[in-house]
Length: 203
Image 1: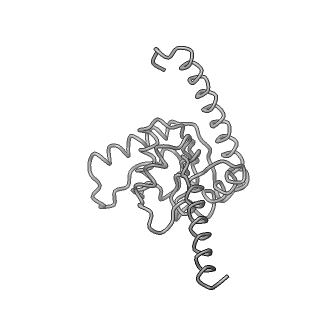
Image 2 (image 1 turned 90 degrees about the vertical axis):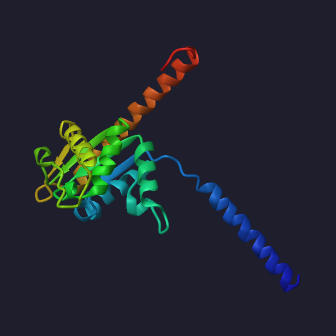
Image 3 (image 1 turned 60 degrees about the vertical axis):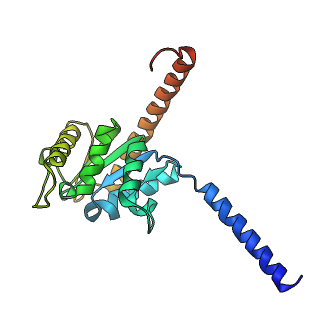
């Protein structure tokens, strides 16, 4: 076989391989979106929880794990937050200073997601929007405050990083996530059967 034929064959296999990879990269909605303040919790509870859920074959979204250079930040985050089944909100001391944290939390609440709060080194009563002169619009501040109020009155996990065990909070959060996903799947199956039986009725 001459060199030209070999190169053509290589190009053919390379093209096939690329096509297969693209087909395999069909993006499925994530099961769980981990909303967190990176400087506080990315190297601890957020990444530990992501890794633990991934080992259980649960599709979790964590920004630095699921996004790559060139991705549109808001497009990816908005799609993942709206399409996830469960949101885990890891509240921490500087959480409320982050526009992205509050934006993601508001998306959870607006789309009526099941939200599991983890209050890490902070009490629910301490959650309030911190503008710090960042010129957030009044509508956004109002929306963020509403989302925080919803979260404050949602039963969650509390964790003191000076006294607690990271493994315990990650295991407890994972158990709650799994139970929530099972409940959601059961509800979807019931709605599906009802839709088949009574197609004329709104579900």
